[in-house]
Amino acid sequence: MNKVNPYIILSMRIITGMVFIIASYDKLLDPEQFSRDISNYHFIPFGLENIVAIVLPWIELFIGLGLIFGIMIDGSALISGILLIMFNFLVIQAMLRGFNIECGCGLKEGEMIGFQKLAENFTLLFISFMIFSSKVRIFEFYPKLPLSK
Amino acid sequence: MNLRNQLIFLTIIPSTISLLFNLFNSDGLSLIAIPIEKIKSHSDLLRSSNVSGIREIDISMAIELHEKKTLFVDARSEEYLSDGIIPGAIFNDDIDSLIIQIENRIGSDSLFIVYCSDDDCGSSEDLAYELQDFGFTNILVFSGGWKLWTDSGREIQAYE
Image (tube, rainbow over all chains, first blue to last red; front, side, top):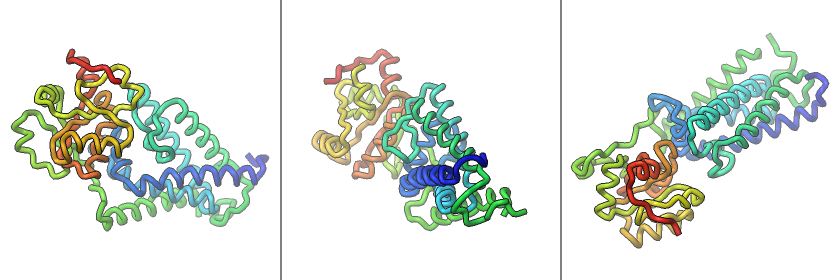
């Protein structure tokens, strides 16, 4: 990925970072609603949706800020990719089980799960992969590449 | 800082902050979600001392309360209402108008029932909590909702 213009990678970081920060905002303000949104997927057992609803928005906020401000870009991009794979898995299993539920993504009120959501997530997943793979970066402040041992 | 340490930092630090923030937040959540109390009979309903005011009922209780002319509120999206609604149910996708409708019909302390498409839809629970935030104190969520109602061969009403 060294051939990709570093300004394109910077734009990708800002877009992905903004998406995660915006997504975290409503969830931070109303974790109870987010917990119910998670619960609607009928996937997380033992009432653990509350813990996920408490912790996940803060992780999203940190990786969003990391991507935008050039701090721990590799870690942020990798966690972003892992989260997006998890989100897609949840959406796919809910679609296969015939659930007609709100996505709870925090980006648009009332947004339902479906192919459009999957397409958005796969696009962000690809962008996260591009960021993670890029080795020529600008506005990266900590740690500087190459990764220190 | 190598990748492993970055991953540790980006998961442990926000997790710790979030748990501390939740601990000291007056509106913080319990770490384990507490399921809504299930009401199986009329005596359960009378005995129930649930402080949240939101409880869950099954089809038999829904039928019983419908026969007693309890108000039903449809929480589905309008596009699904072409199939019909539970007779006597009200629907309004504008929350302020819905609140006025409910208050005009039964006030804010009387029992009413919220339902959506089926067991998995979640919008009935969301609406119930939203209405609770507006001061309604006695809300039942009909789990199974429209699907269970129609599957049990109950009468339906066209939505106009």
